[in-house]
Amino acid sequence: MEINRVDPKIAKLISQEKKRQKNGLVLIPSENFVSTAVLEALGSICTNKYAEGYPGKRYYSGNKYIDKIETIAQERAKKIFHAQYANVQPYSGSPANLAVYLALAQPGDTIMGMSLAQGGHLTHGHKVNISGKLFNFIQYGVSKKTDLIDYDEIKKLAKKYRPKIIVSGATAYSRIIKFKKIHQIAHEIGAISMADISHIAGLIVAKCHPSPLPFTDVVTTTTHKTLRGPRGAIIMSKKEYATAIDKMVFPGLQGGPHENNIAGIAVALKEASSKDFQKYGEQIIKNSKALAKSLKENGLDLVSKGTSNHLILINLTKNKITGKRAEKILEEIGIYVNKNTIPNDTRSPFNPSGIRLGTPALTTQGFKEKEMKIIGELIAQAIHNPDSFKTLKQIKQKVKKIITSHDTKR
Image (cartoon, rainbow, N blue to C red; front, side, top):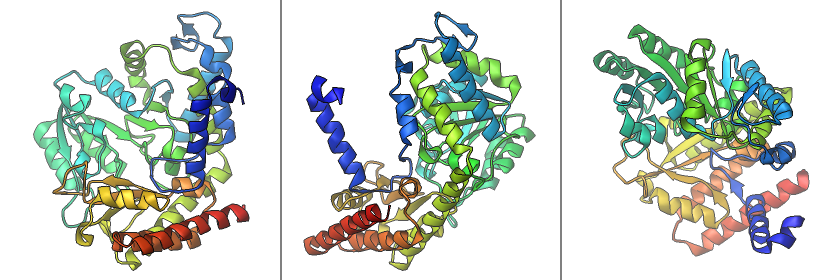
């Protein structure tokens, strides 16, 4: 490879990262493995082209083929999500959300979103994020008794504060989100309904989770995670919001779109429209449920007592171990998860009371329920024995055996 000659130091690090990914169990729910076809599009000569503007209306010449690629990506997004409009230019999910807020509201306006501490995303109004600094965000969350979204609270807050936009969607919520219910609440008070489906987009395409389209006014999603594409984003909406959103994405927030990334998105969307992808989404859920069952049977507490999607949130309070330490211990034995706050957490986000894990990446690699049962047992053993060097060493060997055995089967 040319990179080995030009920059051996970076080439070596990329090689080491490839080995790390192959020799570990990736259970971080926002991570996945893209196809070779997507990687080829990402590394293509499309990266050389500047294309400020939109297909048919660029500020540079020479976009004859780039226009076609971006148009295909738009049309594929509209088709698989049943959307009237799609913008595939946002660099990622965070700028996509910001573009919607700025297109459809004014700084200082009131918006509602799910609290980060309760399972929402940073861009849903957290005070340290630009969304929370520019807008008056009212935060909603989950019931203390059930760990489920409290739709009555959303309705009560909506009537009290009359927000311009109500945002649904989450990053650490393991149950089905009732998008239609939130949309109805928004329209009752004259608000715009917006859904951020970044984590569950692939499940929606695979018909494993209810879709917020076509009824929701605006929908944003990243293109990686369960959708299994490159790191980008898509904004979809009803036609009446298209012009305002287009203008805010460009020239409002961004310059030239990353057309190599958009080519990768187009490829991923084609893959997502296949029957195999639907089977993939179904297997994600099967694996997630099998893993959750194993974790519970081995003495771990799960937030909401289980899962209905791709992710699981473990409450480590009774185990007397923090999420930060659990994450580190599991990483050392070759299992990758991420530390995460749990609802009503009394600890800091930097050292919270929980860990978050999910099954999209392992499902891409072909793991099934039988292996999820074993993986759940190993995670529980590690958490129950954080100070036993002997036990952790044995678990590490078992992790290696699972990976080696799985590679042999494939």
